[in-house]
Length: 418
Image (tube, rainbow, N blue to C red):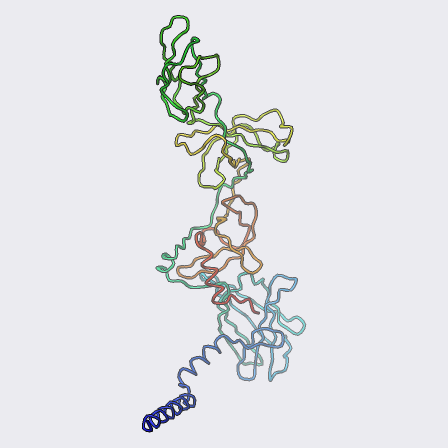
């Protein structure tokens, strides 16, 4: 018993000594330096005006992009021995190397206590920066990356992620009005089957909901006058949507069957006052189910001259072929009516647009590099939006799964720090 107690005490002491040794052991200097270096890479020295501070010996430049109430422009402050240098004593130029090897050359003139760039620094502010300066016979140069809204994804990984691109270019932009309505049976495709002679129903061959062909026997009736049987036949192909007949009953003048040919239907759309002057006979229409899973192309073949009293709307009729049976009478429907077409020199897909800072953007693609493009937009429809500025015609941009690019950029940190 005593030996067991001593053994437990010994094990406890050894465990305590091991823990103390681990706590007091120095952290591996290589890993520590590696972490510190990674942290330093993200730190940018700042000057008095919040700009990037570039230092060499006892000379320094503070590079800012000023955009308060003005188009973005470079404003650079010079320092010698931490004292502000008069801008007239500095020679300065900056080159911005953007994606696709686009090069912007900025020259500077003195203004107040800073040097002002002679060109607008257009968005995105993402470029490699080369700075060259002269002061009192000495030359200085710096090179740094100022990337924003940019990420790099290997091409094979981009394919696996479902990222697709295409070139921005011209389109025919259709201007549409979206109307709602219902599917109706085409009365010209409806047949009411009545008995030729009064009589008694002897045989019934078809039921409500049956699909029949022209010439099929629907029922057998015995004539009251001749006591001879005659057949009641289907005059058209279609669906029996009403059956008002019972075995042994005497017939009347009312239809015994109603057959509807549903391969050809009417869609009646409600046109309200605000759209009346834009909707006319002959205009193309895309008929679409409310869930958006089915579409059919047609055109308006009639606009009613009458107004519905309750809704103050006007009916526009569209005849739709329904060979596949996807549309059903009574079904609610949407109709996208093309009221005008415009030739647009440059457009992008609506599906490509994302929100980035305060801009509507797409992501341009340069091999495996993706970079934001802030757009100035114009007219649009459900599929396309006109581009007035921000991307060049022919530029590849992400059209599918662009949200993945945005997420990757935000994860890395899409700074706009000047």
